[in-house]
Amino acid sequence: MRRSVFLILAGLGPCLAAGTILAQDAPRLRGPQPFTRETPAPPMQRQVTDDVRVRRNYPDQPPVIPHSIEGYAMDLNANKCMSCHARKFTDQSQAPMISVTHYQDREGNTLGGLAPRRYVCVSCHVPQTTAKPLVDNVFTDMDALAEPERQPERGRH
Ligand code: HEC
Ligand code: HEC
Image (cartoon, rainbow, N blue to C red; front, side):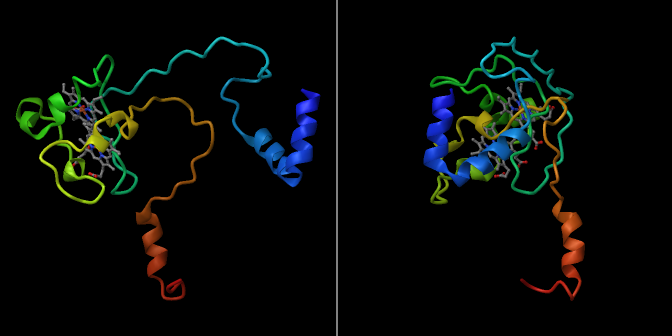
């Protein structure tokens, strides 16, 4: 332990100071125990599954998932999400259709089906829990920013 700290010190010099500050400020996901001690995992948080669609924080935000996705298959042979969100199933499911961007490759060409880069839905769309945030969120909605922007003294950058 000491030895590795010494090596980091020698190698990284000033970076260490910044690193130490970050390490102290970082929220402790695993509680107050030192990392050398094994502690039981905290219980899984209950997911919000009230079926109420959540407002997006900005237009391009992948909307969060307001329903349970437990046990939904997503592998080479099956994509459970598409059994409701694909265009051809939305009359039965009443689910919002995946938007046109999900049919486009990264060059902007529109494909005949779901773009491979959009196949794993949960890499962008996630369920929510009521867990207390570990860090304060200082995000400001653009609607709140737009008003002061219009004042002449702020001008263009
Ligand atoms: C059984 C049908 C069904 C399946 C399967 C399903 N959904 Fe949904 N989804 C819905 C419906 C219906 C809604 C509308 C809100 C509600 O009723 O929960 C919805 C809403 C959503 C929304 C919110 C859209 C918005 O604009 O707010 C997202 C994101 C979403 N689903 C993603 C997924 C993902 C990812 C999967 C697979 C892991 C999935 N859904 C599987 C039916 C389904
Ligand atoms: C690479 C990230 C990414 C992946 C993967 C992805 N999405 Fe999305 N999704 C987005 C973004 C970003 C938006 C909002 C902007 C847009 O429509 O492109 C969105 C929007 C949506 C919407 C709302 C559409 C609307 O018009 O309101 C639904 C429903 C949805 N996605 C479902 C899915 C499902 C189901 C999958 C898997 C088959 C999936 N998405 C995969 C990023 C992704």
